[in-house]
Length: 287
Image (cartoon, rainbow, N blue to C red):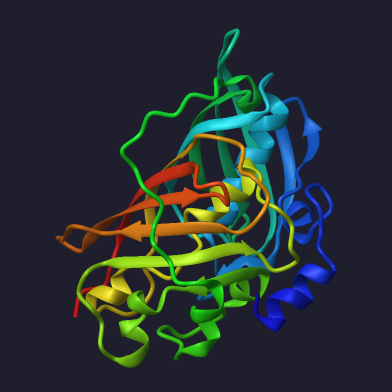
C-alpha cells in the first residue's frame, strides 16, 4: 500500500463518524421535511457532486421510510446545486413487508429568494441483511493493476477549470490504461476504472456506494472531450452491503450522440462481489 494511503488508514474513520457522514447528515424539521447544509468539500467545477447529493437524499429517505437501505434510486438533476443550506422534502408512496417506496426533492433558494428544485428522486428501500446469499452471474470484476501501480487524480493535468475539492476527500487510484487523456492521448474507448475509497479510511456502506457510482473522472475525457459533463439522470442499484476494504469501480460509455452520453458503472467490493450498479445520462459540450 502506498505511503499516503497508509497514513490515511492509520487514523481510519468509522461508519457514522466520518466527514462523509457529517456532510450528508440531515436534520428533521417537520414530518418528512429535512434541513441539510451542502458542504463545499464535495464540489467539482464549483458545482456539488451528483453522487454526494444522491447520498444526501438517500439519507433523508432512509429516515422517512420504514426500511433502512436503498435498493434502487433514480434521480433527475433539474438545476445545479450550490454549497450551503438546502431543504429535502420526502413523501412515502407505498410501504410493504419487504420494500417501501418514497420520493424526495432537494430545494434551495436563488439570488432573488425564490425556491428552486434542484433534484427529484424516486426510490425503493429494503433491508440488505435479509437478502439470500445466492449469486448467479456472468459479471466479472474489472482487472485493475495493484493500487501502487495506479495514479491519483493530481498526478495528471487538470482537464477542467474550477474547484476539485471532492478529490481531497476520496482515495482514488486510477487505472493507467484509462488515463490517456491526461497525456493528451485519449484512447477513444470511453472507459474509466479506479480503486475507490474515502480518504479518511471509512469503510463503504450503501450510502457511500451512491457516491462511488459518480465519483470518477468522466469517461468523456477518454473520448477526447474536456469540460463539465453534468448529469441529467442517474439510477443506482445497491445489490449488497459491501465488505470492508477498497472498492473497484468501472465505468463505460458506448454511445455519444446528440451531445449526450450514457455511463454504466459497476462497483465491486474486496470479496469480488458486485455491490452496486448504475446508469446515467449526461450532457457533453461538443467541439
